[in-house]
Image (cartoon, rainbow, N blue to C red; front, top):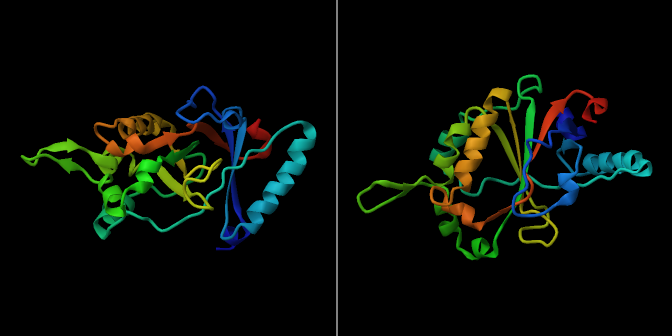
Length: 220
């Protein structure tokens, strides 16, 4: 509780060969050599950390790019879905166990936000045909393989969705080296619009990969 109140941080060193451009160009993120991931109960310690970091980096010719987000209650989660997707989910762990961290910023299209909530919620469940055969996995089954081996966190745009110059969501994932392929397969499944029609309404920023390190000096 004390660390969350004061602010927690992680250091990650970029793995450019593993990162990949997607729909939304973001040169500052593409060129980022390191990531400092921050979380806290309130924004004050995060803003102070950012201010001091800029004071160290910018006078030396570097740049700091910020992706901000807030935690919100899950929008499409029934009790049954919680038992399926969140009860067995991988908990956060130390960098020596889960050395990879991946950031996935994204937007939803205006067509998505124009749907009513119950229509949007339907995309997270499997779809069945007239003969009760599975015709699309939906978000939940497409991501099933990662539930137990990929720690996942999602933050939402602080000022609301559809704001120019801001991402609607920023995803953050941690996993073991041996589960990197599982992460790639999960993302490929989510991006397959035949199996996961939700992704027709997604516009992704860079998929940024990093390796968690113990000190600031190891980031560069």
